[in-house]
Length: 307
Image (cartoon, rainbow, N blue to C red; front, side, top):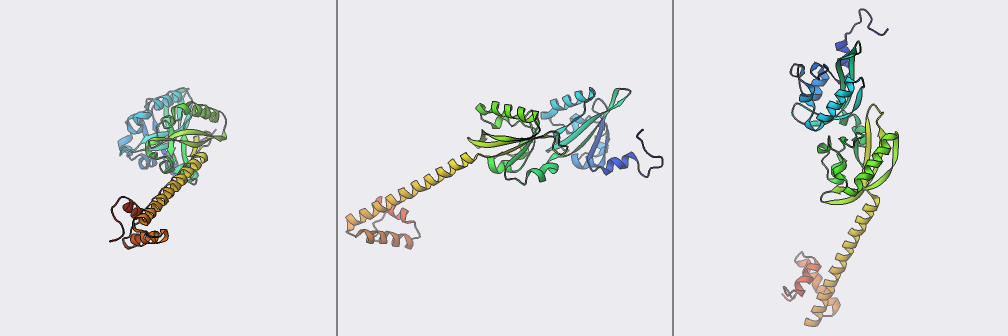
């Protein structure tokens, strides 16, 4: 029989406090009956404010009310639940929590629910933010429970706004089915899965991204599917090629304008071509202008380099 030794130097309250994680207990209807000091620090509500209130109205945002009801239904049926879950602080801000809930039963009847939670972002940040990829943690239904700041740098997405939302709207309509199939395969088999290329939104455009999924649903630290996303190497190569082509085109156009200006000065003033170029260059330097700009001025009659 498991129990406590008589005369133990600490009680249950001290043990719960020592965990360093938020511990919250409710009755079967979700009314809070216990709220430890770590819960005060994590959610911002004092125990005096929290006890007696329904947990759904206290720290469960509207977007996850349906999921919270499903979790409660599972617990009433004797099934514990663990995973990422967007929650709300007292000040209204949201953050991803890693939550483990279990029922308390007496004579086979559910008499209470105890939950342990921590900030998922704090827990997985060292794991996910070492990579330059955009990293997200998703539930099996594609709802995002954590997003690294790199999502903003690579794709322009606000990481805090993604928590509690589905990744689906960020994908091109024609690629949403492909992600759903990929996620289904990943959920069915733990571990890393080879990446696929999908179109995702970046600003007002669609770009190709390389998406890799890793099933860490059984990992007590993550409890989700990690999605690593980067701009597709092929997309990057295309963008670099387009940039080089644009630079080359600008260089060719600039050279053409300069040659036309040299020809104009040769025909109008009789300068030899090399003298014409020297005059263009000297005029540009004396006025801190680019030689292309001076050539344009000559061709448009704004200057003839004689002044």
